[in-house]
Image 1 (cartoon, rainbow, N blue to C red):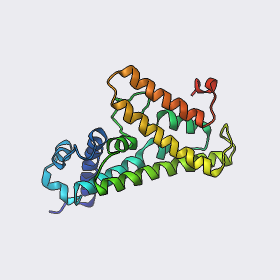
Image 2 (cartoon, rainbow, N blue to C red):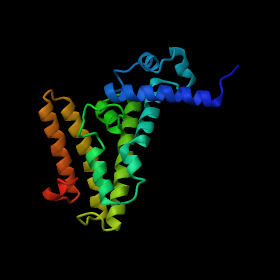
Image 3 (cartoon, rainbow, N blue to C red):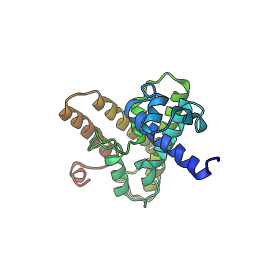
Image 4 (cartoon, rainbow, N blue to C red):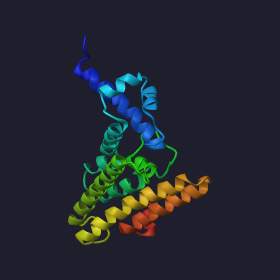
Length: 209
């Protein structure tokens, strides 16, 4: 008896969730299909009923991770500077680097930042551009409503979106390579402060964020 459509969707989701967790923790090269299926508590043979390759699984994983991320959710929230600063302060779990229960898209971005696989590089670039566009759209909307502390041109707003994503991903990538917890925290805190300065926040205002 063939499986129902709902059963197939649930099975695919189990595989995708297991893959997302592993890719976010270890990156594309260090994760095998066997590991994914073992984590999903399924047999290896079931994989190809849902995905053509590990590369296809990775692409589906990164798209799903971005869709479920903080940045995507906040892009749909009411337009306010409070939501923007919440995005900046929590987007990368900056207050808890080791928290990995709900990995964000930045986890994949810094794990596979130097991948040489053509398909992975393409997926990486698409993910980066998607995140930048989401941030840019939010910043431009706040600019139109005069809800940012500073008034920037449209071009400047777009560049700020790029800087924010690059700063967050870079800060986490460096922090992950440092063994001392205190220094890791300082790196992340410094990056966060610079991003808030970029958005027009003063030192006194930052203490309330």
